[in-house]
Image (cartoon, rainbow, N blue to C red; front, side, top):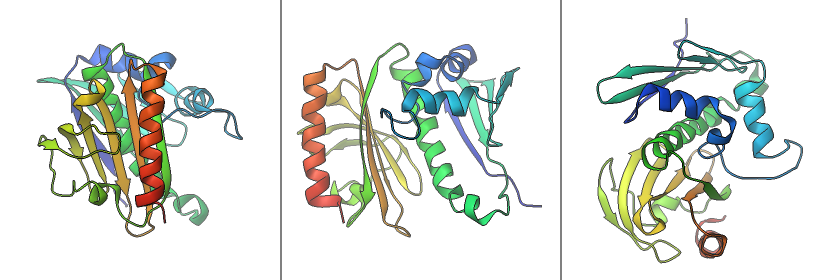
Length: 228
């Protein structure tokens, strides 16, 4: 029997706060995914409704999502353990082709959940999302490949920001807490097997002019340095 893969992390907050962030629609939009409007999927609010509230059961610290994923919340020393258990591969080649991408997405979202609950529990998030095929990994382009969990860094980010610390590193992702964004988060992803890459910026309690300026600088850098 194929073992169901798990993603586990510890959030430095009580279980009630984590559960609230997982079950309150308004709180979910401040850590899940990124902002987008309309289109065939109906935007971020519709995506949240589909993933977290449609054919979903939630009780006793466990959320059973409609795609077969299961999220468990439990108290541990130092805070709350969150474990997401993925279903085994279905055997449907069309669906299974997206399995690894969905797993990577969950790593991003759970780390964004952790960041929001720990650093901005009642903050209002705006996002910048840049995606596409990459000529070079965003992490490599920023000279950040040697950074590990907890490291302090001083980098030349596209908008002029540069100091902060590493929130997490996984096989394909790097999460940077950026001090100059009043503790914002940049998640950089790259899959060398496909060339797919993303820079997802989470900016909290920031005025629109500043957010737009950050987006402009990062978009120009992405087009000139990252995009294939």
